[in-house]
Length: 404
Picture (cartoon, rainbow, N blue to C red):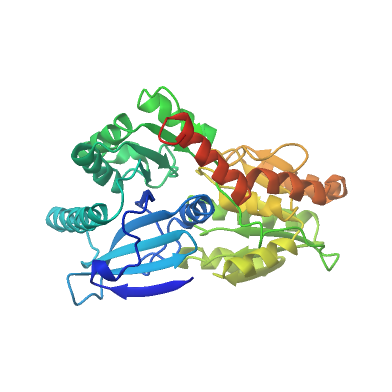
């Protein structure tokens, strides 16, 4: 049964008394405040809920709220998503604003969980997704109820070129993340590359890799309907994604040949509009803006190659989504972006090496016929489908003794 409701009363949320739930605490998650934030966590939660009843809790501000807080809950099968909204303007550049924000976050998250744990059976564990800020709540749970917690880190912030680089954070933030990792029962990451970086940075014994998941009911192979060689790029088009380097290289490609086009999926930032205008004068570019998953899948299915030329990444969903559509990928070796790519499904180039990217684009156009798109799709689906990812979480929980 599907529900999607708002309330400021805990007892109106359809939580079964004395039920044993798995509890996930998400620091990032899609909300009305940040609609696309942490959508990969949502896919993981949906997959895992097919095995066991799951409550996912996220807490975030609402700038338009006229009451102190309210709950937005959504049920879908075994999954109950609960977004706790609290009133705050969202600006945290001033120290006092940041202190107030953190106080409200912690207050509303812990009050909700206190009410929750009085109603349900004592959870076997909680699982934090992205350590700050929900990791602080997990530490409180561990101290109060002796319930262990896992941490999954999906951020690419641990590489130096990341726009929100961990090394640029203040000492308090760094110490809290360190303590959250230190007290966790186990830690996972979506890529082995970033996982190894975290392992060394925090002197951890082990990091388990559980990759991002593709919705294979949407992202699947479909035969392309035309003969135009079509590249596609899906991103936020900002500095991290090296949109300028990407477009400069396609401009150079247009000087060599003109039998291709480029589809851009995502909002083009204001500071990139002039660059886009220059490219539109040189070759065929289709900027389609921000679209839903079904539309993204359609555009990928009608492309020959996905191109991602990022400066920093963890394990991009768009790469595995493209592979599930049977579309080969050209990607930089930023973070864990290259981990899904081999000689059978794409090409890896050094980050920021525009000459190497140009050669890869030419290589792809000349040798596209050598890629078996059906095999690419089948192999990717086996690796990144919901069932595979859910089993990996279950294996993790069994390995650390919270499940039999």
